[in-house]
Amino acid sequence: MGVGIKVENLNAWFGKHQALHGINMDILPNHATAIIGPSGCGKSTFVRCLNRMHETNPDARAEGKVQVKDMNIYGEGVAPVDVRRRIGMVFQKPNPFPSMSIYDNVAAGLKLNGFRNRKKLDEIVEKSLRSSALWDEVKDDLKKKSGASLSGGQQQRLCIARALAVEPDVLLMDEPASALDPISTSKIEDLIFELKENYTVVIVTHNMQQAARVAEFTAFFLLGKLIEFDKTEKIFTTPTDKRTEDYITGRFG
Amino acid sequence: MSEATPQIQWHRRVADKLATALAVICVLLVILPLAAVFIYLVIRGVGSLNLAFFTHIPSGSPGEPGGGMANAIIGSVVILLIGSVIGVPLGVGSGIYLSEYSRGQFGKVVRFTADVLNGVPSIVIGIAVYGLLVLRQKHFSALAGGVALGIMMIPTITRSTEEMLRLVPNSIREAALGLGIPQWRSTLSITLRTAMSGVITGVMLAFARVSGETAPLLFTALGNSYWSTKLNQPIAALPLQIYVYALSPYDEWHRLAWAGALVLIVIIVATSASVRWVASRGFAGGAQ
Figure 1: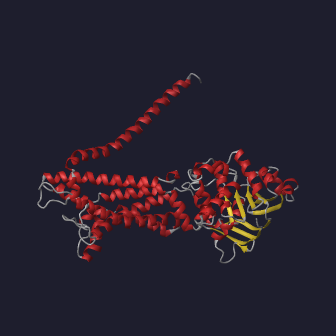
Figure 2: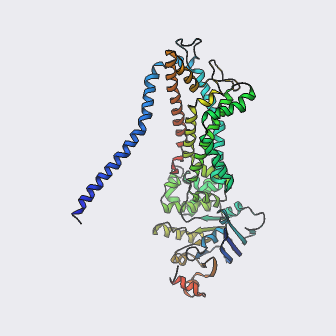
Figure 3: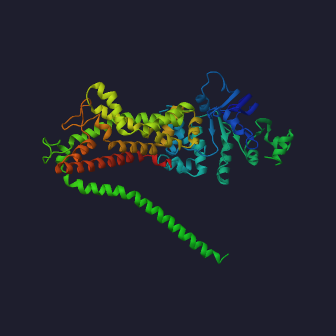
């Protein structure tokens, strides 16, 4: 089951440059929330703060409160590694591990964290590949083919399976379809619909139609600030803020 | 426009042929010396290769026919093993440090040190190990020879490992971190594994380079005309034996020196080929 995320006064920096300014946001469980905004507005930085990936950049840091179920991920003594196991991430460009087979790619998160039960691993790999709608295309050469030998769209679904295999509560997607062709894109979008049943999905997208298609809620970011956050329908039809309206009607960005 | 096209194509075709020809000539020029050395070694050395060469130690009196280099072959293997045991883990380890962990000044210092060490003449390393180990132990030893070769391997392996790891796209590291895999684990099982074929190439280059080193062994392993595999005793080595025999006035020894040189090359090529073969199984080749 997915869980909600409660973001309170989240600030983030790259060196001296402040990339996020006091973000407050309540992300509902088992829904898809889209993050939109022009390039450089902090969308990616925001989702990367939600599983503490932001701080892996040199000189980057973040402050604030992000409550996921019973855990404030920026709380004292919370290990980033544990946060990332519970909050999975899919990146903009498909990034399967090239030295591993399809099977090992999906199993990597469990295997490299010390999970050894072979039979259970087989089950989880199959289940994850089925959830990411890739199973039928790869089931015959799971251990024969390298993850890098798949097509771009398949690679991205492999990356989704890999993220699902560690059984996270939340799935963050940073422009997951922007490097893909239209057919692969629509497959990923269909997938997001199914994933919502079991996970909370937060998706960054450049594409406003995509946000409208897959997400119940949409947040509009501008210059590191959250301008407006509401039901997707409301954002795209009757936005409250003038800047949101300007953006979605294509006046800038 | 349509009239000008054939002429443009004609120019382009000539330029294309020229560039290709130049590249092929360069390749031939590169292959030529290697082929020449190898062919010459085979011609001069293969006649002196017999079973005795691999099973006997040098004959008692100088220049006398018979005898072999069995002790030097085994001695080289022992010294190279010691060298690799020292050089490979230290080299790969510091390469990993430079690429994955160093931020700021200390990394620069390490990198600079490795480059300087790489440029130190091998004879100087031999003298240094002589001063540090041989003088203290009060005798030459296989161990000292291995240490000298190991030290020579470190900087080459460090820098090549670092370069190879840097070629691994950052997105691969992010993917691993995003799965909640601890950094040490992701570095060893994912980043290093992705770069493995390149790292092994670097290790083999370092290995091949020190395999033929004579100068650093002169003051450390010293050489030995008798059987010895003891680590704390002087030990024979192929390059040393070749050096001594080639400088001698005896024809029989000259022939043995040629054969020794041939065997040395074959050992290097065989080691390199077998290590690559082992490493290329699985998906190591999928990294590109």
